[in-house]
Structure formats: C-alpha cells, structure tokens
Amino acid sequence: MCGRFTLTVGERFLKQHFNVANVDWDPSYNIAPTQDVLAVVHDGSSNRLGKMSWGLIPSWAKDESMRSKLINARLETADEKPSFKRLMTKRRCLILADSFYEWVIVDGKKQPVRIYPPDHDYFAFAGLWDRWQNAEGEEMVTCTILTKEANDTIEPIHHRMPVILPREYEQDWIDFEAKESSGMKEWVNDVSDIPLDYYEVSPYVNSPKNNDEACIERV
Image (cartoon, rainbow, N blue to C red; front, top):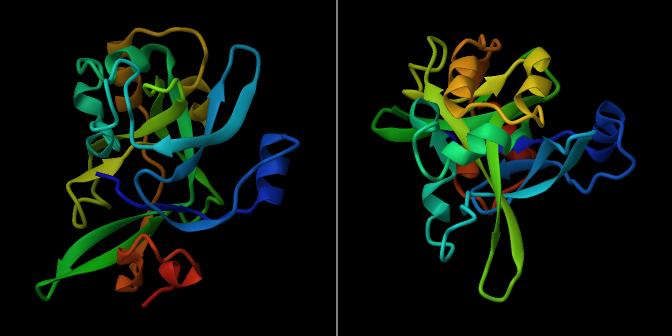
C-alpha cells in the first residue's frame, strides 16, 4: 500500500515545470490520507494542476464513510471494482510526489523508511479521481493511488508498492480520450518501474502532525 508520502518541491519549480501561472502548494514532508495532494488532469485541451483530497469518495456514495478505505486501489482489480472501473476509463490523474514512506520490522519495532528515485526531482503516482457532493450540495474532488505487487527493490520492505509512472508515460495515462478499463490495466502492467532507493528515517514521521524537514532526515 501507500499510506504516506512527500512533495517537497516548491511553487517556483512547479510553475516552471508545468508552465502554469499559479500554484497553491507549500512543500509537504508528510502527506497523510484525507489531506490535500497536488494532481494533474487533462481536460481535453490542456493539462490542469490543482489540489485534490486523498481518499476516494465515489460519486454515487451516500456519505464519506468509504473514504478511509479507498486511499489505494489495487491495480489487479481496478477494472472490476465498482468504485474504480468507471474511473479507469476516463478519470485518471497524476498525483505528484518525490518520495513515499513504508515501515519495516527491525528488532521487533516498526522502522520508517523513505523510498525515493535518486535521479528525479519529482515523480507521479498513477491515480484515479472523482467528484462527490454531500447533502448540502458541497462538492469534493477526491483521489486514490493505484498499487501493485512490489518489485525486487521494494519487496524486502513491503509486499505492495504504488504505481509510479516514468515521465514518458505520464501524458498517456491522463489522456482525455476514454479508454477501456481492462486495457488501461494491461497498459500499466507493461510499464517499467523507475529506479528507487531508500534509507531509514526517524519515527518522528509516524505522526501526521509532524510535517517538516526532520521527517526526511537520514538516521
């Protein structure tokens, strides 16, 4: 699974890289479920960069109760599950990050590990998004991160990992044209993983209340 990650690049980088005039984002060292994430979608004519709330609420949901259970979507069944199948066809997004955390058991204790691509200033999780309205008519845009079986690098840490798209595949993932959901699943399966590395960090990161550079310091 993917339950915590970072996006520490600032507004200046994001404006220049994505060629947008305004970006509302402060570097975050400990993004947790229900918090805002920065995502990219394609609206049919251009890419749009903005915030979504992490934890999917399907448009047909009666309330927010499913949200905490839908921070991740298993790639293996995303083309079958009612919460994700429709989104796989057209509501695909890039969720921006520059590392993510997992926890391993060391001497009987959970040790947090920061996983990152050494040669990337940012990367993109493959995500799905949806719009939901509450009883008062207030709209929320929410998202989930696709996950898959861990590769050889991540498997010693955790048996699952987020789907991370190489740069050359990012635009294809958010292509506005509707695609068949099982075809998109197979497309992702054929995408090669980017190189990743990792190091241990302090248990300080365990609390989502902590959100500063100490979260990513090597120990």
